[in-house]
Structures are given as C-alpha cells and as structure tokens.
Length: 464
Image 1: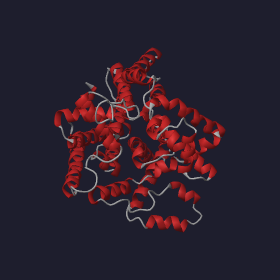
Image 2: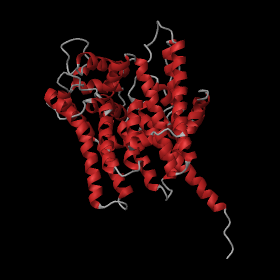
Image 3: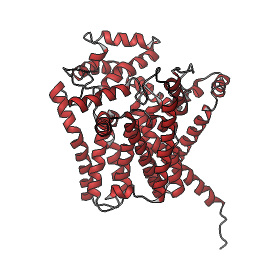
Image 4: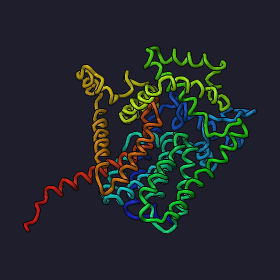
C-alpha cells in the first residue's frame, strides 16, 4: 500500500519521527510544568476558536449533535465545520484527554515532516529533503499550534498528504491515489472551508505534470476520480445544511468574514472612518441582525447582497486593497506570536508589544526608515525570523526561474498564493501555516537549483 510505503520505517523516517515527537513532547512537558493552575486559559485548550472546537467535539461525543449549545434544544451549528471537532471527538472517545489530542497532533507534525523530506528528496536530493523538513519542524508556529487544540496542524497535514499522494507517490494504483487525494481535500474543507477551491490548482497541475506520461483517457479518469472523491466527502455535510437551513453550502463563515472584517477594513481605508463605525453602518443596512444571527446560513444571502453592493461600487479599488494586504500574510512573525502566547498562557500576561507585527509594506510606505529600523532593533531576536522569511521568499521566487523543476516550483508557488489571496485582509500568522510547507519546499528548490547553476558556471570549458 502506498501509504505504508510513504511512512515505512527507514532510518530517515525514524529520524524525523523521533525529532518531532521528542522536541514537541519536551515543550509540552515544559508548558504543563510551569503553568499556574489558577490563571489564564486551561492549556492546551485556549479561549476563542479552541474552546468552540472542544464544545462541538463534546456534543458530538456525548449527544451525537453538531451544536455549540451546552444543553437541549441543540441548535445546529453552521459557522464551524465538523472536520476538526470530529477528530477531537474520536480521540476523546478512546483517551478522554485533551493532551491525547496534542500527542496525535505531534504525530501529524512528524508525518508531515517525513512527507516534506520525501518530496524534497525526490525533486533534488536528501539534503534538500532534510532542510525542508527541519524548517517545518522547528518553525515556531508549528511548535506552538501542535501543542494547542487548534485545527491548523491537521489542516496542514492533510493538505500536504494529498499533494504527496496526487503528485509524488509512486506505484500502479494511480486511480486509488487520485480517489484518496480528492477525499482528503474534501476533508480539508471540512476542517477549514478556505480549502474549498483547492481542487482547481490540483487538477490544473496534475494535467500539466502528467500529460506527457499518460493518455488523454487516463488523465480524464484520474481527474474525474479526484473530483468524485472530493464531492463524496462534502456531499453529506452539504445535504445536512440543505435539510436544516435550506442552503446548499459548506459554511456561513465566508459571508460573515467578508461582511464583518473585509468590507469594514476596505471602507475604513477608503473613507477614513474607524472600522467599528463602518461595521455599525453595515449592520444598520441589515434586517436588524445581531452578530450571532449574521453567522447563520439563512442570512447569508442578505449579507452577500450588501457585500456585492460595496464591492461593485469600486471593484478595482477593492481588488487592489485585497492584494495589498498580502505582504501582511508574508510578514507574520511566528516566534513573536509564540512568545506572546506563552506569556499569556504561562504567566497570565498580555501582549507586551504595542504593535502586533512588523509589516513588509512598512518598508515601502515609511517616510522615516529610522523608525522602521527602530522597530526592528527594539524587538530582540525577532528580526532574525524576518531575515529567514526574506530568504525563504527570495529563493521561492528563484525557483520559478529554474527550468528542470519549474512545474513543481509553480505548483508550490500557486498553493502559497492560494492561501495568501483567500486569507484576505484579515491576517494572523497562523493563517500562513498551510502555505509554509510549500514555501519551504520551493525555497529549497530555488536554493539548490541556484547553487547548482553557479557551480556549473564556474566549471571551465574543456579545450577542443
């Protein structure tokens, strides 16, 4: 079976498995040991998204319903999707501990690193695979969110696994791999709806990468099976939403986020009013909706009408605004985010930094570069991560210019661009996590390709 071959116990796989489990387990032990019991969130469950995932999981486990209500009647939940809460519920059934969820996430990190090693090695050589995997393992976001009950680790793992199965796995069972890859992407959408359009780059690049190796009939079969697997996983959930809310959809999250965050930010930049003022103005145009009501599927059409009104008033301006926020997606400092979260979890202290992150676009818009340098130099070791990401982005762009593996380079770049563009103006460093494995792979591809071309130029030509 190709899955067992992907994770077979070779020395390299054992190495990555041991590093991930040991390193993350030590950090988990540190967190649990020093955390005071009377202040702060109940680690590893955090406030906000994390606690809602747990609430949904407990209702699945104890009552067989998908609802945030703590008691009957259980109103159906449409804002969250069931992928991650279902995984939590399954783990709790067997182990009844949130630390078991963390341990499984640590295993997912190990498996992801093995997949990155295999992909990097197949494109270049073993060293490339090692670098890509270690960059992922020791990335601060990976370390922190593997130890908390958050959906990002599983979302990233299943995305990377589907890429491996569809584009890198070897063997004769191509149809089965296509079916499994499509099903995994369907489940990725159930973890976080942002993955709903992932089949588009998958189908395009599968055609681009394999059209010379396979007949048109085989290509059509593989692509059809992939799409079939994708919809087979999603259809039951969409059918449930149709039956409960009268809407064929996956989540009300998209409409709510654009209405509550993107449009107010856009209007704030356009008219100079505060985000809160613009949000109040938007709600005044609804049929007296509250924030909780705006999250319900039955009001999505009403929100979408208001969204379209403001976008169509200035489509070019909104597009430029949306794209202009991409640098914030790239500039998030995961080590600072981890540091701030540790302060809050362990010591009950809040963010000591008046500004959440250093934005790349500060460098372009700042009139006084001295102030930019002041911000950098005042943040201790954090600028080193900015330097690291700058190198990653640089070599990722270099990879697009290398002929031998340019198709794979564009595959990785497209997946990164996908998450950057669909994340939109509301940016947090953890939203970059599913793009990071592909950033690391493309950077490694660019670095080793660039080094190889430099060495080739230094070799003197032989005499005729």
